[in-house]
Image (cartoon, rainbow, N blue to C red; front, side, top):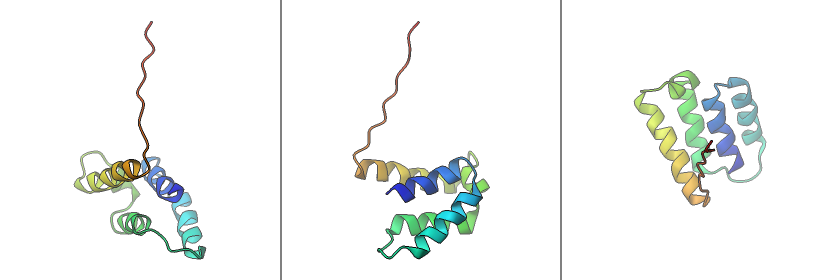
Length: 85
């Protein structure tokens, strides 16, 4: 699912060049592409990176939920730490 996270970070950092690179890579892959990656590409095509990244847009909640559920599927945990001085 590294491609999924790459697509997400392309949205987060507003990088359309890497999105196009990943799109070409996915098209050349000989394996079955997971639906989540295709859905992420569809969101980018329909709404654009800037709108997906914009705070307060309803569409970005769908993207963030996709990432949250993928992280749960991948058994990832987020660790918050604070350095006390």
